[in-house]
Image 1: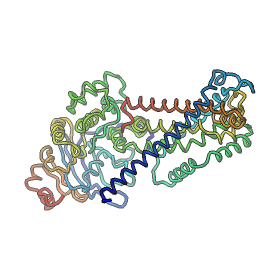
Image 2: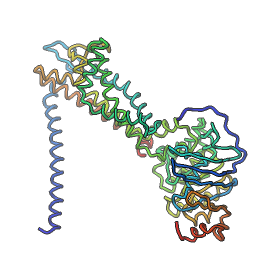
Image 3: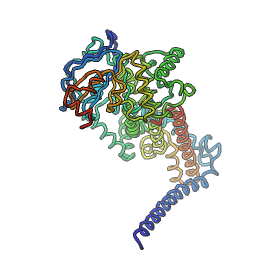
Image 4: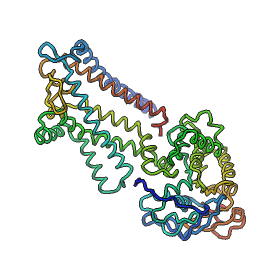
Length: 263
Length: 283
């Protein structure tokens, strides 16, 4: 329930992600089995695997979006910057500020472009116009969409093209100044040109923040990810530097998947 | 006839049937409006609208205009906040499978289907007799409030449910609390649906007569002094005038009622357009 809770903001010591023996259940069904992984800061980590393998579910445990699903239960340990994010009374809204998310389908609010980006800072209590202006402009610039929209900030975000909407959503996520950005198949609904723009953008962003991207496109993982994790039926099969996983995978199943024998 | 010819023939005749029903329904509507205007317009004078009521020479619907507005005020002032609040609870804060919610949903659906005279009887027994208020605008307004409440709850809930889940997720993923998500994202996105629901509810209030017959007393000749005095409404006046041999006055009152309904619909259109200008309503 949405009762406001006064709590001390947790202090993150860096933004390394450390997951140990994570099990996740939807009611009776187990969706993630014994997942353990460490993800370093300021790099791109890709999750690949066939549909329904648990990669998106796992992504959503990292900012606790699974909390929204009835009957979802999590066991095990998920640490970000040394903080157990599933500990009792943890400030989940603050976690989500620091661990931003962009979804598969662009989901701009039905408001102006400006108000879309100013939404998060306003949530944190920023009201001064010049402060908001600065955040809006810098977020749009970081998502490299500023030049395309600077003359129509007051117009509805829904008038933008799909690719622009998705970059707007990235800008909106950046406006909360996250240290990790979770991308859930961000380009699967986009054309190749828009996809290329977003991939280029990811290359820029990883200089400042960590990026975890779920993709079902293996070429995309190969192009942009420093490390890649392969999921299959709720298990983390293999996690290694991207070049290693695509050139000589250690696991039989990984080999079958990347050579296109199933998936 | 070949098969192709037959299906072409069927297609054409279906088109004919739809055109015919379109014409029939519109002719009926136009006929009513023209009939009312022809009969009533001549009687629409300043005195008829706003003058004092001294039968048999001076007939006025001013008491009904005041009564209608008061009823609208009471019913909406209670119905909108409570109805919208309940709808928000049902769609945003409750688990849709829970027994309580299912029971509430069943209750609102049943209540919105009950004939209004039953509400009138309830209002009569509770407010007029039980509370000992006698016939009063307050009692009538409260009964109308009870009558439109399920209507508002259902239409607002429908509007809220149709807001895509992805917008709620977007807001929560930015670190917004649930309450902010509901009030800044979900409600504005549902605003045009909510406005439509409210307009429907006001329409019901304005056009209701059965409830009022049993609760406010149909005192057509006196401007109500306060909320607890008996009174009348436009719809009741139409009933009264036509029952007591004043069909032209009834038609003239109908014109006023019609104009009021048109005015409220225009208001809704305007509200929707304003909200759409802000980018809402398209989600």
